[in-house]
Length: 111
Length: 113
Image (cartoon, rainbow over all chains, first blue to last red; front, side, top):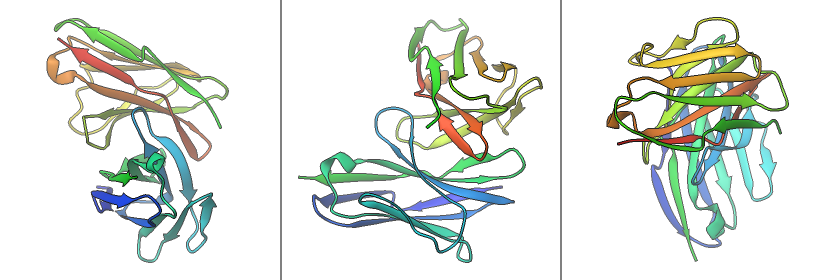
């Protein structure tokens, strides 16, 4: 059975801090790893990673995949209160591109 | 990016009634759509995978007779919660696959009273 584990489950920081969120996985026929941000509604897409060692960046957010270690990290620098959300890691695998989600990391950024 | 819509966004129904939720891919054709369920403060749980023109594949523990899925066209999948009970109250989210990416609908909040 495919499995995705995220850590920490929750994190409280102050504005301006840098945070690192972790995701490890076990999946059959790995295709990609995806990061999502979820506020009040459905998740919004952040990154999709397929190759090991290549960092993807979007503003203050960046992510990297380590296929050897079966893990990924999501970094957020200079955090803002608007970054407060649940960050979900999902792994896409199998012939039907099924996504298996981790439980998420609840990030709270205090002013 | 691609757009996926869900309708309704919120529904309240009485116990014993059935509710239909629609998921549409607005600007692309989706051969595969997925239905997820999310309980408060929990992650998304895949309920079923829906392929256009064929029967849905349900995850273990999901009752196919209770959660009817129809994927009649490349842009529309429906989830019908039959004989709904309060424990079916949840946030239901669909996603549609385009190549190797999945795009999520905005979700439907179902409350069964």
